[in-house]
Amino acid sequence: MPEVLTAPLVVEFPFTRSLGPVQSAFLTGLRERVVLGVRTADDRVLVPPVEYDPVTADELSELVEVAATGTVTTWAWNPAPRRGQPLTTPFAWALIRLDGADTALLHALDAPGPDAVHTGMRVRVRWAGERRGAITDIACFEPYDGDPGHLTGHSGAFADPVTGIVAPARLDYTYSPGRAQSAYLHALAGHRTVGERCPVCRKVYVPPRGACPTCGVATTEQVEVGPRGTVTTFCIVNIKAKNLDIEVPYVYAHIALDGAGLALHGRIAGIPYDQVRMGLRVEPVWTEGTRYPDHYRPTGEPDAEYDTYKELL
Image (cartoon, rainbow, N blue to C red; front, side, top):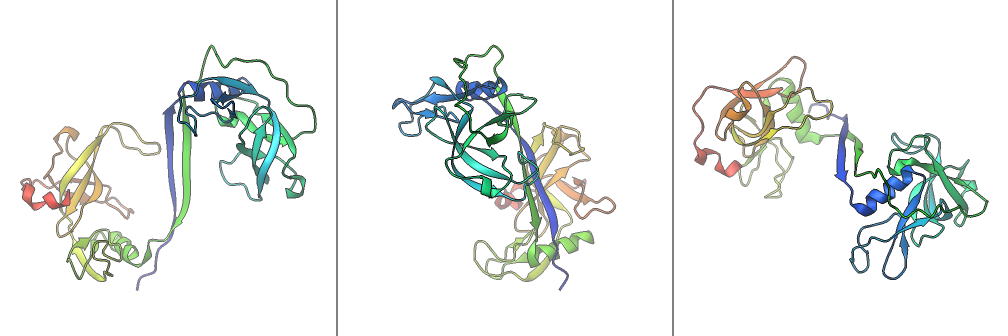
């Protein structure tokens, strides 16, 4: 059997969201070194604030300033900070109830070691040097044995409020594709596409999964499919992706390779984006040193009849 493959896999994208009035005031307040919560009908102050009461689901709008000092309610030590975390040296993740709040805020606590952290310890905000209206405007919390923080009396109304944020999301994996997909990837290295046939329903899975999800039985019979196929459905991409050197607009499609029992996805090129259509016959285009086809292009054949691919949409 060929060697089972492993490789690092990073899933990364920016998440963009608009803010309602409560979240806008909270993040704008952090930019101005003011911490705001929201008051509920039963007179609790929630920090961080939410827009709807978690008990009654009523809309909340009364903003309340709380102190930048507080008390640790529980914590866990982080001996090896990861990329993107608030501190590069070991720290504690802590739930901190700020003075004047009834709920706790999760953030980093800078301490020399786990022996220096305990439930009930007093802490205060360490503000970031540059603030832009994000939770990272609180650089971290630090131990503090002084008086409760001074309130400014801010109402929560700001002249230049933050109305939206972009939050980067990233997941780092070490991915092992297993026996079936390793064989699939080895075949792709030779510019071949190989699936596996279910011994019960006879569907050919590409990429193979090692088992048929419908019949629940193992699949071991390898079947070479393609290389040509049919566009079953598609979308036109108008937003440029980070680190992807492809000019927009371009087309991504589901492509049913000849002999396959389900469609895989690939980029369509070699044709104007507005001429891509269901039933278009395509073939892969490989580039030097790549394991996957760079894109698929039209073969020049007549379009496939709808009945030949309607079950693969």
